[in-house]
Length: 509
Image (tube, rainbow, N blue to C red; front, side, top):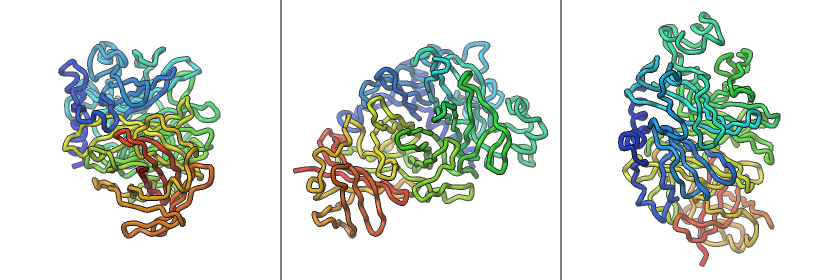
């Protein structure tokens, strides 16, 4: 059953790219209905990884796609799928390359489930040691047979030249030698550690080698976080001089494997993927973002965040905890975004997930992810929102796509915040339920009232920090002015507590 579900999701995720490859045209995704609403992205980039170069913003996504923007709202394609003339990835299908030796196409050691080509979830970073841009991505054949790859370029827009296979997953006793695992451990050890007694890959304990994301730590050490469902999220150190993996010494007591690296969280094939670690020097934390749920519109896809003081963890949520392999992971991790509706939204946002993060040259913090809509289709587009850290250093995602708003205390007062608000609570569920607004009044006496809700609120003088108590749960967040999806000026707040995100929107008379 798991294999059938995986095949269906692979086909679902691949549909726009296949259409582009066959037509030879830009993505044939109808976004006309989003004009002057939503974000006007005009591109369809799945699993977007964002990077800023010389004041321009680039996103790289699954199916060999990429786009560029000057304002984080309108995007222009610079790469469009599995085409020999792809100017960013170059011709990965060129004779003599070894990109698909193990996984990702019909010619690979492990054939793909659907007979197609799977190049997924790239991440691009500039390496000051080599003076090059490094792209990490994966080729994948089944729900756990995958291969992490490295490519490099002198230019952000490529072409990127494939360099090496880094990590393989999903091998069994018949194709163990076809992976590169035996370059790190001997065959006896590999069979004992990574295979079941039946000789298949022990995917519930070990990772699916996809969704890489790369970052430098405070000591200029280079790291790669990766993983999707299967055995959870893992971390490996990389050599800045080459971009290749530095395999660690085995340390089973601390969850360190000599081939796959350090286990950070998850396992037992729980829904957890798309890891992304951002070092925030000002905050003093490393933030680990992951996505829960299934990627389809009604799969409950959503963004969670944990943090740690070290790149190697431990990463914990607002309650000082993290999920384990036993299940019940919906209770762990601060939920930043799921399915929701808000005033001015033409179609509820669905399956908001697989994010990357960026602290821009303007000092602002951005979250980039793809979103679907409650419109009966699986069409998707990238969206970028600004987020701020609350007084305790936890991310608070603003309700609407960024338009260059400033999160500042200027003209922000208790008097301005008093009044009638549309509020949603993202909760912590993993489902297709849509968080819909209810009416909440922030009263001048510091109490709140509304639809069967009671509590209190306050704003710290001359700051953006807002505190809110609703039915006994305390939320800490920020307030600011921005524009809704239709461009109307609004007051908003975003506050978090007990791993929940609460957003508010107020229209001023």
